[in-house]
Length: 364
Image 1 (cartoon, rainbow, N blue to C red):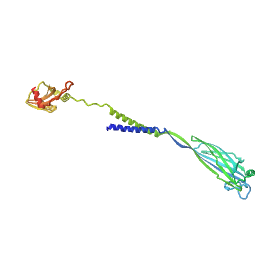
Image 2 (cartoon, helix red, strand yellow; image 1 turned 90 degrees about the vertical axis):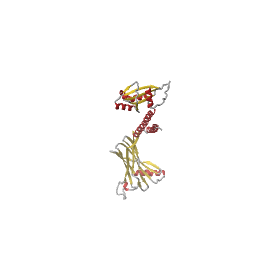
Image 3 (spheres, rainbow, N blue to C red; image 1 turned 180 degrees about the vertical axis):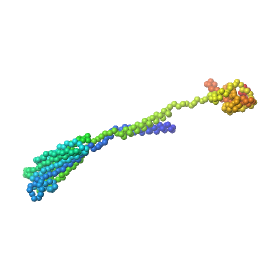
Image 4 (cartoon, rainbow, N blue to C red; image 1 turned 120 degrees about the vertical axis):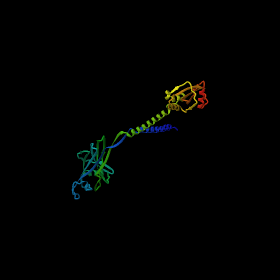
């Protein structure tokens, strides 16, 4: 198989592979998307209470808080519930807060929203965050009378009653190109039995984040597509070049040079040293030269001219170049076949030796 054929086959395979990669790269997305955290926040609500007690011998302080441990319903006159809500945000953003609170008493078979006194709301802003607080004051003596009325009416003595102090804070954060709204509503529970009140968990924390999606040009697609297109283009150009080299017209073989032209080229450089003659003198001593240049050298050495005799006989042209030096004759004989014609195709004459040719020429 020719080298060019092998090269074309290889380039075709390269073109197919490059075309596949062009299609694959073209199918990649034009843009890529990255996700980053635009906003992040942490909220915390801490509950507390302050209980005012009847005069007693058990507690040395009045009022008492969560650090005093369990309370006794018979000693409690009122309980002031409070919470503090804290929101920290990164990066610093615009924040709006709408806090609220409620106090609910619930037993296994019933629940009741209690009438309580709400203290004024307090909100303070800081860089990157906000703090809000609210309190509710419960008259424990009135609450115990309400619970006794319910038990008397329902004839259902509850095993326990929960005092649920619920915070309900709605906040909105705007920053980092995002706007986020959340509600944080933990509940502080005090479980009241017939003889004691047991406080529950006081601190609640939660974290959140808001993500932002950014679009960017897909650099990998452009690089892969450019490389694949370049490979395909080079392969196509290579195929076109090899096809041109294979299919372009080639020069045919050079036309043969006839004997007359060849002889003329040999004699040409020495044409001024050649004299034309009409006859050939007869000499006893004849030296036959192998090449025309040998005659030229003899003429140069002897200081004699080169004589030329043209003889047309038997359908063949003969050229006789010779140099005469006294009784010696230096001779070079060259026969030229005539050009063939359609009417009379050339015939191959009998090859004579040079001495025979010279003898015949001298006779003529």
